[in-house]
Length: 136
Image (cartoon, rainbow, N blue to C red):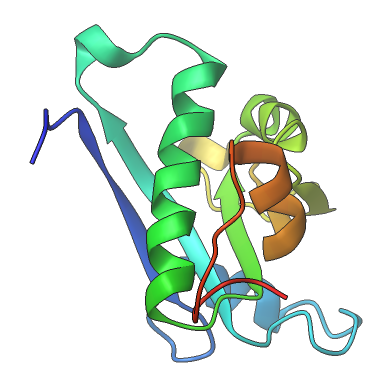
């Protein structure tokens, strides 16, 4: 199985389960299709000795997405995060949808970010998936 280095959570959107659902509901002008087959990524927790910068984050996102696209339809990925993390996620194919959605403890600003799965996959994966569940 390998070494357990952390966890990450993927929640389906449009079912009232994910925190991003509430943020997205307040955005009536989103482009059509942006919420189709959408998932929220969050709760990435790494063991302290593996917190080594953006390359490990890239690898975690790649492994997660490779697994997800092989299991279920994934067209859009959302997350809410602090503005500094939103800037980091830009290098992985995400863009800021809303700069300040609120939601932070003590009134801290949080950004809502979005990535189209093929764009994120190209940014984080060393190889693109092949086979039945592969992206078009």
